Length: 120
Image 1: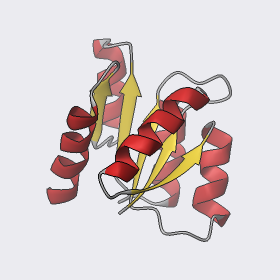
Image 2: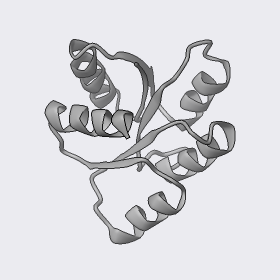
Image 3: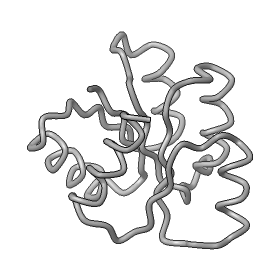
């Protein structure tokens, strides 16, 4: 399974990448929403899931989700955030977000979220 991980915090992206690779996933790193969109449009690799941060400087995770839905309506997207606001969750669900995980999280919790979505 190829997972695109999107966050403007390089350390977090690399930590998630190392952890998920240790569990057998293939991870493509994007250090912002624009880079993620480039990967989806021109990356030449099949992407099976996107895990994206909500709060990024150039474009929010919700805005990225909306763009992904226009490009690939069935591509699973998980939104990561440190902000568990009800308004944010409602907005994510309105735009057909497949999963939601609050930071900080464990690798086991992230893996469980991935597998729940993969099985559904």
